[in-house]
Amino acid sequence: MPPCYSANLTAAGFLVEANDMLMFPPNRSMAGDERGHRALFGVTPEATADIWKLCYPYLERGTRPVHLLWALLTMKVYSTEDVMCRMVHADRKTFRKWAWSTIHAMRLACPRIVSFAFFSCLSYLSIFQLTSSSFRVQIRFNDRLFTGVFGNGDRTCKMTIDGTDCPVYEVDQFPINRRWYSHKFHSAGVRYEVGVCIQTGRICWINGPFMCGEWPDINIFRVGLKHRLLPGEMVVADKGYRGDSRTRTPAHRVSETDTRAMKGALTRHETINKRIKQFSCLTQKFRHPLRKHKDCFMAAALATQVMFDREHPAYRVAY
Image (tube, rainbow, N blue to C red):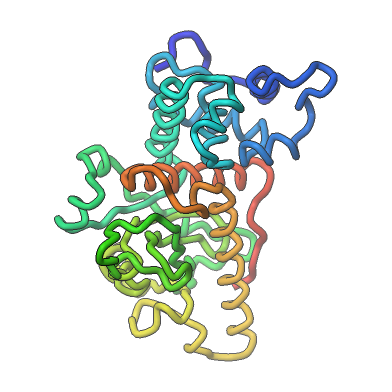
């Protein structure tokens, strides 16, 4: 735990840290420039302070507030290490150590905000070189039970789910392994399943990563989330989830009104996926070891959820 800094830092303090880190002239500081801060770090100064407070128990000794800015900058910009070191005026070894340790701390803090699960098999573990720390998670997705403004606690469907793919470099070059193939990129990728509460728009489930070519959406659902639903509970999903009794897709139309409401919920889900993937580390081909990809995705989910709670919530849908 950092010994010299409080867990309750302010947004103004992070603006000062950003100015000093980027060496802006005093007459061109980022003070009050929320747009510039979000462009560089993906979140507002207030959300940055909230993330620091959430991550504080998991930070390595010696971590400073500027290291959180390094982590967010890495995720948002995801340029080469040489470019990033020039931007923050640090050497490669120092930048690499503190940026990635802080991203990992954000991932460890994620269960306090986002509930998620991780399914794997022995071959999958060997590919991703995961350690026992990968399983220190909580299955806590009761946020889906909140009724919200338009809520009805008796609804059978309480959440929407969808898979989202992230590009990675080919794991096996010769021959190319089609187990990693994503039809969205026509190249290798990893897939995550994201669940969102219909009534509140909060992220309440994340499962992954999985190899895109080997794990279609419906199979990911069947090995994970399906076994954690309440008796009689269903989820709203797109046509990739057809064929299971616990999913409700647009093919199960009851009326035009119901179909429009379902499509509205699924459209809102796509916007949430897009907000998670505003961080370039999830949209560019991942250049780092694959075991770090989950850290980046969970840290991005944490930052997105904090932004939802702080000042930019997902829009409401009536379903």
